[in-house]
Image 1 (cartoon, rainbow, N blue to C red):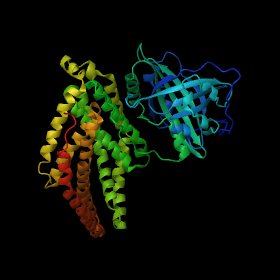
Image 2: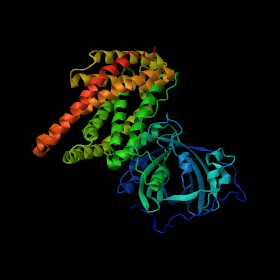
Image 3: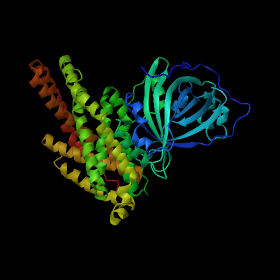
Image 4: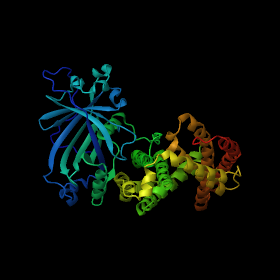
Length: 532
């Protein structure tokens, strides 16, 4: 399944861990690794190194070498649980031991870019030497009780072609083109990726270079590093859906800082759910991507007074395009969840009807257009021209505390939601949908800005809002399900009777939620706002 270079030494051998070398080298300092990973079709990989857009920025020829790396952990994966990876890499006749953090250092890292700590030490052989960790600041990352239980778990074996590009006098980027495989026991996954590592310069240069490469070779941002893929192979687990990160704004954040943080968070949320959505069309993965896209659209609209431009409008339109491509599959997924115990023939027909929209959704997510959207959004955000090149009065507003504007923005959204819900029990699906959309915008905005206020103040408001939204979402799903059932019954007479029974079931569910709506609405309406 994967490419393994001829002459591969084969699977890792079980061996002991050295604890005291004869002549230990000086303690290693932690390096900060900043990289953007791009995944591509293995058939396109050989073309990358020869692209003029890369070669024109290089002042030395590319270098190619084979890298074989063995990752170590305990049988119960103590290191992975701690978020670190211990590896020994062979390159030529030499060996390098490395300890790396597997996740970003902060939830405010640049969107799509991994920022990790890494320690490296030269080794005389292929056995880990944990005594090297002492004095480096990394000693506490591997618990004492785990050290004697470390074993080889999986191997990466690939050919790496490296080019060093200099887009400008202040930027150095190492471009690593990797072709090979990750092997854990009898499970293998192909490595076909390009890593852009920032050695000097601004993060935006990574996005600019990725966007330039994507114009010639289809690529998409990858969020799993080799260690994470290896551990997934070891456990046999599929990629899982990821919920939005908690917002991490501080009360002193400026408007520019808040905007950058919220959009970065939306991009990360989108990318984090792509692996499971693309792997098997996971319904929750697709749903979470739609949530991330909604949050991005609302953020761009909310901050529109200070970030408006032709670029912003185009980005909002492209986010809308991708969200629209995912919506039909989501409708069938919601209906499936409501048909527990329904006629088997109807359940099968719903699953079959979902297949086409699902394939369309997965195709849209994996398309060059979707990849360009994420790269373009990251480039625009990290370039910061929306701030640095804004008019003086706009720049002054962006440099003011976010809290100055958050309150008035939330008050306006709150007032619109209250007006939409003044009838308490909307008399039509249209009324309910209007209320749902307004409350959804308010809920996302409140979540964006909650960190500006004391947690104890924000929690009651958000806790009261959740059941209102859940009730309105249930009404929306029931209404959508009714339309989908009708479309099935119209196309297949044999489904009319079970579809009618299912429609009556949805009616009863909707009626229950409509009766519950006034109480949860009043509970939220009477809850004090947290922004003063």
